[in-house]
Length: 286
Image (cartoon, rainbow, N blue to C red; front, side, top):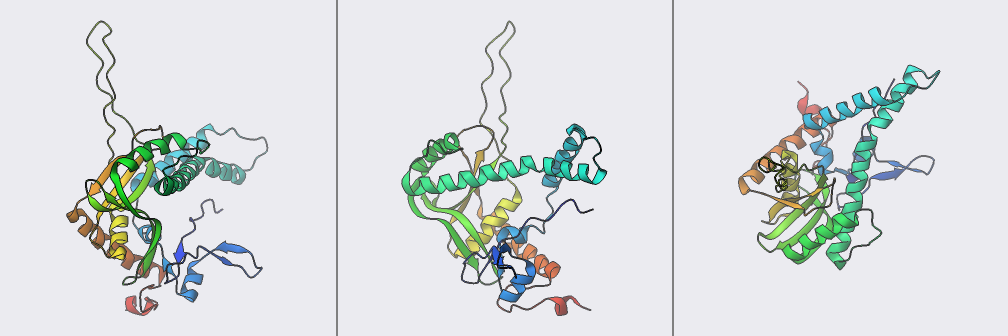
């Protein structure tokens, strides 16, 4: 019984044109596969490549969601174990999929703000986007572009970067937006006798190393000495986004990590999307 299916990977032509879907034999759109990529000489996305790196925290969270779904879902009379297991998996993925939908909607709204400074009041993330607009107006002196495909022609990869701006503090800066749950720490309550409640401390975000790897790959494809910044948006409640700027030392390590992941991806897939466009089978055979 197969319960989990891998997420569809994103692919690009060598000129940067996305080709995430292709026509099936029946003339219907279907997700592009590795077999298609080999045939058409496509480039994998940055996130596709970084998928070879284990993410223990994400895996643990997904397992927790599955366990909670199994414990809380009511059984249906006469339901088979297989049917129940499939319902458990579907239920456990609703939180993840909901977070992804929020992230996609926020990205679209943020792109609109970069070009117009307008927030659609009917947008599902309107309150979050107003905070983003405040950040954007205070920090983006110049907009160079949004949502641009960058192609790493050397290794062979591509990806869509969020934003390139002239930042008020950091200068030319490549920005990648991240929407996630951010916890806010609170100060201790006041003294005895029912003192005033403590005020919320500024939220702190522990960035994932994979964020740095992603931005390092984008910057390498961009070919310009820009700063790299993740802008974290708290998906739980509307609040000011949080900046995390990566140092040059971290980005150098990020480039090395991405190159290693790319190499492992090529070996695992038996496909080299670089200039040679050759399969690695012969290289790894004894």
